[in-house]
Figure: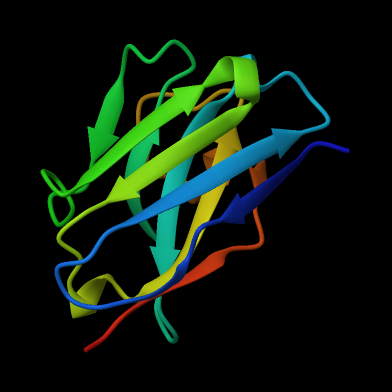
Length: 125
């Protein structure tokens, strides 16, 4: 069964950095766009970044633009989210998600068929 496995979360101080990984298993990774979402208790998941199958299209939410960088390595079936200059408001559970037919709006959650289990990122002194 096709699945995604996130890793790399943890506790960091403000201004610190983390690199999240999203490994795809059980299917051809190259056919899927990969999105990153984050969620805090009581709120809907927030789309923060997306990368297309060919790396041609890359998107960022304004709140993370310039601080986060998304990438993918199709040979390794893995996507990454490099996070720098982390802030307390970045604290959330981070999810990666795969979309076979994303369409025009990368922020629509229902366009992503497969989701990982999430990894906790906590930014605190």
